Length: 186
Image (cartoon, rainbow, N blue to C red; front, side, top):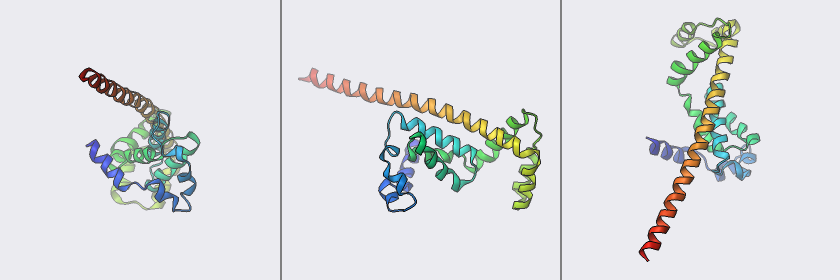
């Protein structure tokens, strides 16, 4: 499964060279440290992508927001863009929105997820969504999404830093074992 995701990302993600051709993306493409996979940029990119991917639930905004968030934090842009795909419709509708409303309601707000489900299934217009957000639901949803996205970013940062450390240690041990086997064979 992981290999399929990596192959899909390699086939569909624009390269830094392609982005240099776009006048809007050129400033991001010119900064080479935003495209390298290093022990510092990988966890930062993962954290930025998870935070924006969960907090900003608008698909077009997520990748752009994650890339822009990587600039001041010097995170890896490709990983940040990839991490925004955590908020696909099933996870958003069945995990993040109910979870965010539950977390927000624990702060004393009174948002109702059944209303959200009804608006989604009915295909509500912008006016109905704005009326829903104008109620007590907006603070509940925003606080809940912020806290969930912050927690996901911290956990993603820690896990990717540990994963990076394990991966580099694994590569080093393999290299040392090959060198020892080669020296033993001589």
